[in-house]
Image (cartoon, rainbow, N blue to C red):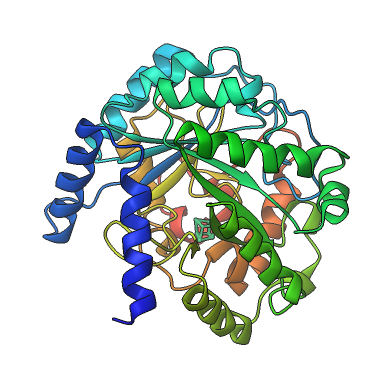
Length: 359
Ligand code: SF4
């Protein structure tokens, strides 16, 4: 392993353990050890979207198309989901939205997620993240604030986000989170056009200089980018991405740090649960494999893993790079998604589920 590789591993370990809580550290350590010896192959992370209300209107929001008026999960539903997920070996929760800081029962939910044992991150646009709120979140058990920056240039970022204050709020939010003792992960969208640009390097360097880790979010041709195939990264871009990962050790993709293996974690190590309880493989793939109100999580996951991409660890980002998804999956989702949220898996992966009696 190279020096940069060792440094990356140390950074990931540091991220997985800070702020230090003995119960969480032991849980992480034991579960990862079990994975190493193939005794357990549980989840690394579950995204919980707790509502689509938001105070920004971003150009490429991954929640576009998922909003509908199904009743939201209750705190009791979440208690059950946490028990089921822990039974499946889940290690961490990512609370997302919409904007989770607009949800008034957020603090109750954080306690239900069992912060003494589990790693908790909160994805926010930082518009409501004050110094006081950051300290309160850290004290409630949040380990990491996840946010997004589209550019190192304030005007470009604010244009994407449709708000002149967004950049300033993200920068102050990162500072407040760091001061409070939390980790910070900053996602930036990577397209075919910007992957080799000096601007992307400036963005990564700026994020790292604030003490935060950079997450490469690969552009996905869905939602407002549905027909924009120019944004998709190519095989050559993917090789260049590996170079960037080596050059910037405090940067990552969704592929690492893998719990059981390295690769796209959708279905194997990661799922996304909508505010109404539908279970999706990833926030960009709006296909439901069942609803946690009706079916146990373990059954939903088994069903999801019957789709080959979600029962393995593809080397690519399935949503951003798999031509089958671009040609045969996203168009079906776009056609079927008529304000009713995620599309049932039977309508999208017909060849996988055609033999099922209720398909
Ligand atoms: S398809 Fe896989 S790698 Fe791509 S965003 Fe979804 S979970 Fe992450």
